[in-house]
Image 1 (cartoon, helix red, strand yellow):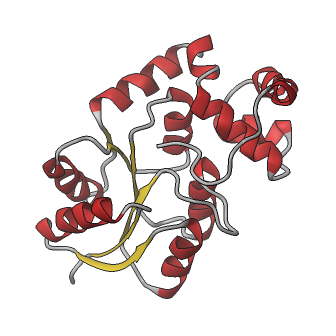
Image 2 (cartoon, helix red, strand yellow):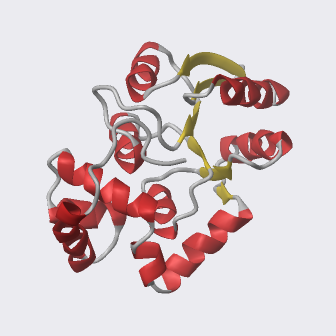
Length: 201
């Protein structure tokens, strides 16, 4: 049976490239999405064997970033997921891996890498682009100030607070100490407002 794939990214050229990588493996794109709302609609409406998805897309009614993949995992626990991103924060990459994301692929990598990753994931293995693997390993070894104060991570935490998550639930989802989350909560009043739309790469 031909492998069915849902792909999601808010940039049409990326969708075209991902579609080409999927086709190169002999799989079939059954749906495309350009926002979290479209993604969840596609997953409800189409049976699929693999999701290839951007890390963050413009926000509709649904969540984005780590919370989006947490929601995907809760609703479709057996669905293999490949995340495309240029974001390299070890805390967030590790959180995605802990949520069961099978592959973390650098958006700047050659198309052949994504095609190879699709095959690897469909065989049940996990993989990460080299820079991402290094970031996760460094994060596992020791949480440092650079990782915890990265702008993308700070933005993600701010969004979670805005959506009503507690300090405890944020710390659990991101696998970081509660005091670090609390520090960001206290600092929010001093930072510029979190803009709507994309939270990062």
